[in-house]
Image (cartoon, rainbow, N blue to C red; front, side):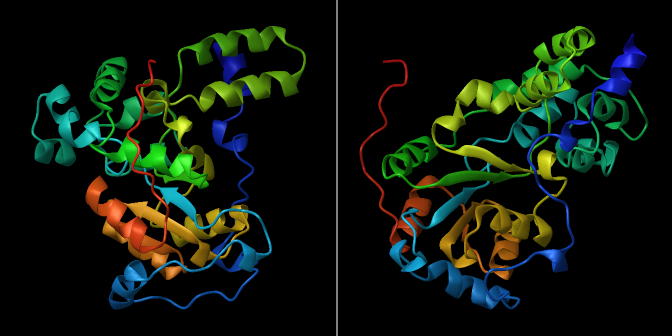
Length: 296
């Protein structure tokens, strides 16, 4: 039965978003491809004021579009804070013991969590996968001040997307779907169900980030990771927008530099207070209203 299930259920990356994997040169820019920007120009770019209006684009779409990294930009990353303690070793030892490419392959959707568990450590040692997932889920929390900022941006009707390196963590309900697959004749129906539950994210389950943004651009569904320029161009191609009308926020400077290389305005995240200032300098409207209690 297990063999039949394995053969009949497609890999999630074949059915998530219709992201066509193409080479860098194959993207059809509706605008002139920007020249490579140096690190010196990065400073100029990120301090420039955003002046392009929606009217100038001939559309009612509110610009700029905001692209947010997730880990350590919106959400505390437990990998660096909690996971070493879970394995009972310091971070340096963990980095030395873990497989050099397994996590990258996981984030790109090339392997699933079962395969990750099999090859996570270079020596092939086993570990408690569910325990690791629970450890990470407990460690997820909003970075101070970021939820209030997202709330304010949402109130001002900005289009906000996640643009993140993030893996597939399966919901336990997915296992149930594998079994009912045997009894459902319509592949369209079952593919839709699998697509829904594969997109289940531990972060979303705990923090409900989709109240503020769309989980649109994730490495596990595109097969690409930042700072791969193809990933950025794929985002622009799907959004159908000039890169100068996008603002990208990330805590990793290299990812911000890559965004600037393709013409996107890049902001290096340090904390919510400074990000508010940076966004305001771009002409972004940010309400100062405090977020209301979600439980009320």
